[in-house]
Image (cartoon, rainbow, N blue to C red; front, top):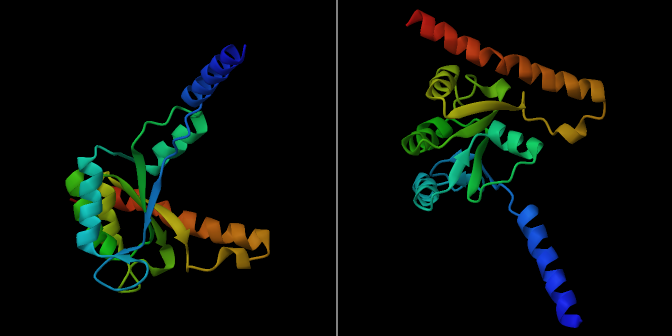
Length: 184
């Protein structure tokens, strides 16, 4: 009797593992790809090695919107699936990360501090953003307008206004790209 119960338990356990896989999609978060010894920086050579490893090991790199679609639809998650993201929109994302990702055809998303775009030397400018959008492998999202610590905003209406200001700026990106393509 104990053996039968054990076999039934084992069958149920195997079914649960098969039906509800525990694998989740890792999201690799980067900030700066540079030779700085900053805590948030990854050296370009190290980043290139990391991307080369993902390619050699046959990882499937997906865009964030595909990740969200998988999560919402509760589809089975393919093993070795990864999302690559960058926070802040540093210029070195264009200088170092973008060529490496482009070479491997790996998509990524960069979350911009929109108030710094084109205004501070260490951050992306609109021409760099347009080029990356045109590649079809880099998407953009809003990190914030000025990198404010969002939990410090107690008023919900003010918080939503901050989100909407970023969204308004980001909605211009495809239009700006279209204008450049029409001119060319």
